[in-house]
Length: 425
Image (cartoon, rainbow, N blue to C red):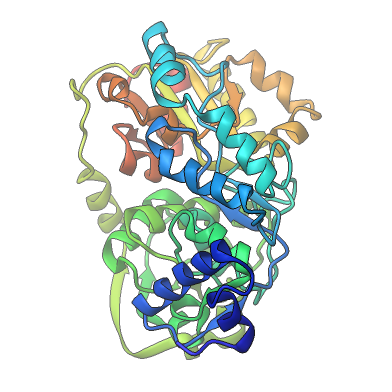
C-alpha cells in the first residue's frame, strides 16, 4: 500500500502511539484486501454498528477508554445502531432480569464513552441513520466508513455514496484518522454488477422476500436488477425508498450484498445503465414460483413449530415515518374488519427516536396507540439475542430478524391478518 507523507507520518508515530496503532490497523485491513492506497473520508458524519453494552464486550470498552484517555477522538460525529432496551417493550420477569443483570450491564457506561468520543446526539441511536429526521444522510459520491450492513447497502445503492461492508470498530478507526482503504465498493470497477437479475413476477414482490432471494443467490456480488421498475416506478419517493430500505436489508443479511443497481431507478443505474454490467454476467430469473420456493424453504426453529405467536416485531430495519402512518391505517382497517378494538398479541413497531418524535406530533400516534400497538426505538435483534427467546414464538415481517434470531417470517399482509384477526396464517 502506498501512503502519502501525512499518512506515513501518522503510522510512524508523529501524532502519538495510539494514533499510530489506529493507522496500522487500517493499513493491515487494507493490505488484507489488496488496497492500493488510503482515501479521505468525505461524509459529514459517520455511523457505528456497536450500540449495545454487553458485558462480554469488555475489549471494546477498554479500547474506547484507551482512545479517550490518550485524547484520540473521532474526526466525525456519528450516529450508532439502536439501543437494546426499552421498558415499554413486553418482557417477563426472567427476561428483564437477564437483560438488566446479565446481558446489558454496561449499557450506560458504553453510551457515556460514545458520547465523549463524538456521538451526534443523545438520541442518535438507529440503524436507519439516513432518514431525514435523523440527519445523517450522505450525498452521492461521498466516501464513508460505516459498518451497519443495512445502512451500507442503502447508502451505496439508493444514495450513491461509497462504502465497503466494514466490521465494527473499523468504522470508528476510519473516522479517527480520516481515511479508509481504497478497494471493493469504493472503486468504479468494484461497483460493476456481475449478476443480472430479471424480475418477472405478476405482482409487486414483497421487498423482504425479493431481497432474501437475491441475497442468497448472489451472496457478496453486485446485482443489476431489471423489471422491478415496473412495480416501483422511476422516482425515489418516500414509498420507494422505504421499499428499498427493507429490500436492501434482506439482501445484506440473507447474503452479503453491499450494493445493488435497479434499472431506471437507482442513481448509478439511471446514469450508466447497462454499462454497469461486467462482461458475461450470471443471470437469475425471479418469478412468482421462485419467491414462493424461497419462502417455503425458510426453517422454523421454534420449539413447537405450530405454537401460537406471543410477540410480533415490525421494523428491522427501523420503520420510516410514512411506514408508521401506513401501518396505522392498515391496523385500524384490519381491526374494523374483524370487529376487534385491539391487536390480538403484543405488537411492537420500531423506528428511530427522531422518527418517533415526528410521528408523535401527528394525529396518527394516538390512533395507533389506541389499537394496542407499541412503538419503540430498540433493536429487535438485540432484544431477541438471548437464550430465553429461543423458546418464545416471535413473528416478524423482517428477513433480517428471521435470519439472525428464532423469529418466524411472515409477509406484511400475513402479519396484518395475524395481529388484527388472531390465529396463525
